[in-house]
Length: 199
Ligand code: SF4
Ligand code: SF4
Image (cartoon, rainbow, N blue to C red; front, side, top):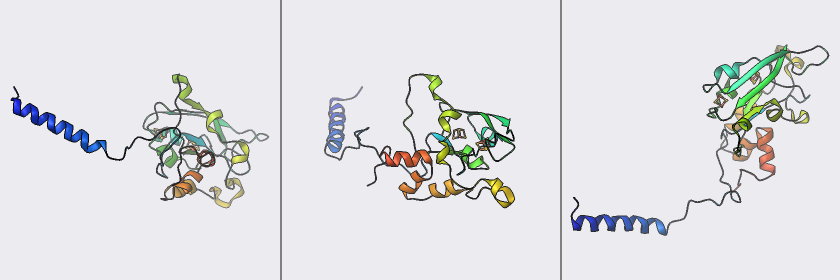
């Protein structure tokens, strides 16, 4: 059992600790009116990119699903029709889903993708009430047709996308604004001043 003196010392130490922090600058941020900056390589909600001509970058190869350590990605490829080409490859993603509740935002899908189709954006506000809402299918992941970037590989010798690695390069900077500009949804967040406080 603690002596009377020991109890007084414990109380003293407790109050001293409280006092020490009482006059320090508070780390609390008044979210959502104030948002903290996060790193340029911050991994948030995914997006599926397109080429400048509107074609989908995803060729349904399933490499992202194989690389995913959380088994969060489902890809079912479909054949492109000659009169309705969705992607420059033979196949496109007939079905593409990410279960964001399983996702650990490691970025391995981004690394594995041979066409820079799946990328992680800085968007982190995904709260919802139903588990099913966290399964993001293609209609929520794919950027609009006019938001594509880069020449498709079928217009290039060797069939390699011209800007392969561009997103990673943009994100690997210490310049936060460049990190946001690397993705369509990141640039949108920057324009709306959401999730980014440029200091
Ligand atoms: S970020 Fe990681 S865990 Fe999430 S879908 Fe991609 S590979 Fe899977
Ligand atoms: S997102 Fe990339 S890795 Fe995944 S299926 Fe499409 S092309 Fe393949």
